Length: 264
Image (cartoon, rainbow, N blue to C red):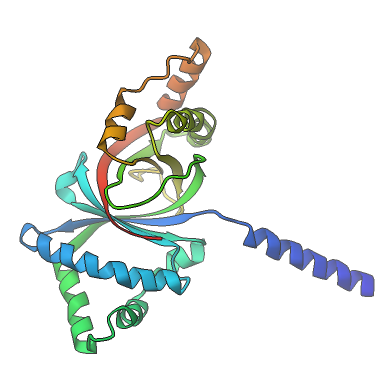
């Protein structure tokens, strides 16, 4: 009996340890549209929110928060900002930060504000913006780097859709072919960071996108150098593999954005 009990305890400890060591990252991407006459008001609001999300980070509810200003994209008229909230597990991601939690963290960040003032602040925010698209994503793989997130960083948000019947082939291409290419770019100093994400929610065949890649650069100089960089060391077999990988997916949209606020 004691032996069985010991085996059960060991098994539970192993499962707990495995879960604790899971460093998978989860992110919610919210694409925000603000009416033109409300843009400056919204900029003031999101600057206030940086301290609120820092309280959520200190409380362990999130693992990070980014606010990006869109520079270009296929449908940039539909929104001007991208907000990314980072989580360390899928349950926290799906629960998100409800109104009660946001009010709690706002009171901590701004203790001088009354309940009425806080309520008005959130009500005004709802009237200032629309959110035409929200994506729940799970990071599959990323590059090895020491990239530092700070205001002024540039990122290319590339929304992809795996072609029908080629979901697994596309993911293998990103992990086995494109990741080494991006890792080489980072080592050459023409890129800061790259990550590959998959939608965390089941989607049907009519979904607009299934994956997202993030390409980050420390500034415009690195970004333009990255666009001009070409790996001349690829042989014919490698180029064929790259082309096959490209053909396994459809690049739906590409958005270039600048980081304005960050909480880590």
